[in-house]
Length: 132
Image (cartoon, rainbow, N blue to C red; front, side, top):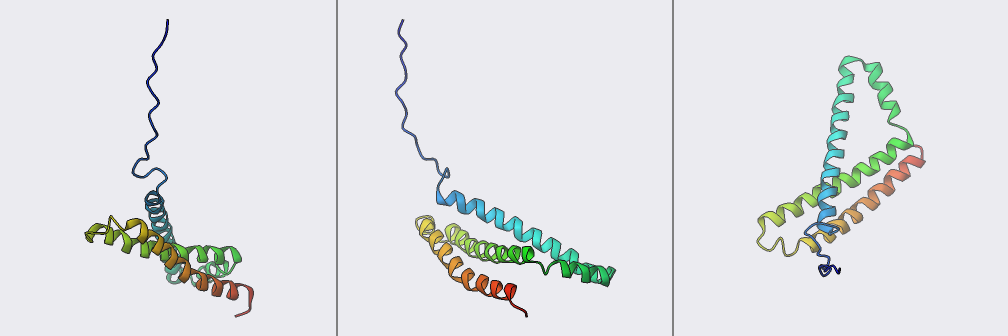
């Protein structure tokens, strides 16, 4: 008895699977949650100054560690990417040619983020390793 097998279907690339648009979508959400978490913690630790100034001072001292400095550098990248990618999303939604140029705009966003983040992070590293 023989069986008939269906011919193998060529793999179709779906709209988002592995596409740069999917990665920008995911990074936009991740950076948004990261910024929200930072703002939440920032509001809470700033509120400590009214409740207990001593606790506030101890919290601020913990922020002067190299780990927190690295997290601040990551926050700079998150804010830059989220902001510029948000402008890109607005252009895709409201500019008639936006969808056509969305991939090019993504690479422009990444280039602008890199150009702006590099000197900012360099300055932050300078302050991390020097007395100020």
